[in-house]
Image (cartoon, rainbow over all chains, first blue to last red; front, side, top):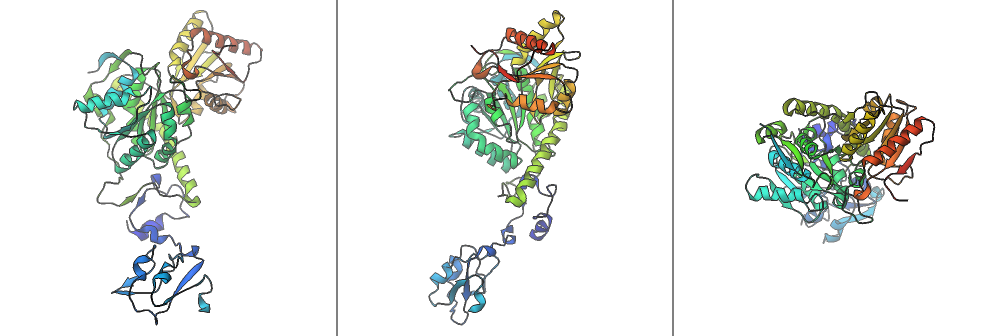
Length: 107
Length: 392
């Protein structure tokens, strides 16, 4: 069963009859369907012009919320970033600012 | 071919386990169930079973190991008593909500306070709301037979719930009685192979067991357990019928003894039923219309059937081998009265608390109870609840 199918089958509108016995979860990697980004009270803001693509931020993210492709980081995955700001601490170039959630546009 | 033998209830359970040859047993010794893992260890040492025996450091670990093993997809069993079961309580609920068909040999013993090692039902009654199926045995034969049926009930796809097979500590677990033991082949064929539809060791399918259930899911999970427990009624009946057909000994949700025209009756569970039946026989000889119901299946609770069997009865003594300290009696008292309410109204009842911490119940005690019930019919007020067999 694909992840998408499973998430269509079992979600917060499912009746008890549709939920697997014992709540067994079939298939792996489905935690990405649980959007934890709305817990965030602080938001990291990436300034691409200051970024040297050193990738120090990438491995320290506790929630895999900094996607990387072909050796380069992309913008944050805000569906899952909880705003811990560890990335901002490790950035040697000041390329990540931290602002209060909801005030991202002011930057 | 079955054979006649003589053995204790613990031995009978151990023989059933040898015949079932489960994949994993995780147990910690506690009186009076200690002999069960002890016999199983001997079977293992003698090469009679290929069970993985895990000598854990506590009952909390025993049930945890059973949960892990069962989730991995194998038959997992344990045995315990009293404080040992109490130490498992947290995991008993997990086993039930994870819908893992674990089977436990429970040897009933009083819970400590004051410390005591003898029989009463306070241990398994404490676990009555954990979501386990509970089946009680009167003697070694019933303990053996119930154990042979346990896995088929637990593992049925409509059920998938853990089962505890209970017997009274020492009275049944250690007393040696005559018993019929089935040959290994028939016993094994009856229990059958276990092939779970989903399990953790299946390399072709990833699986997560025991996920956190937020409030958006917890209640649906419980509703599903409710359904499984209700489904167990039919499965227990079917498995018991098949057992009767193949082995010749038949069991229902309860045993009704001389209930046809009974005016006074008692209801109880476990070993005390033998003494009760003796008392009923003696009263019947004197023309007293006395009867007895021995409850075999406490979870799921056969409320409707009980309301039916007591319909003609005028006064009923509900006997609890455990006090619930509600001030109104024990768990059986509460559940049986709830079962009768609105279905078989007008029956006078008294909830007798008896046999705590191994206190004997005698034929004479039953005579007193039946006498009080008769007086109740004649208009003397019956107390809601009273201790019997206590000094003073």
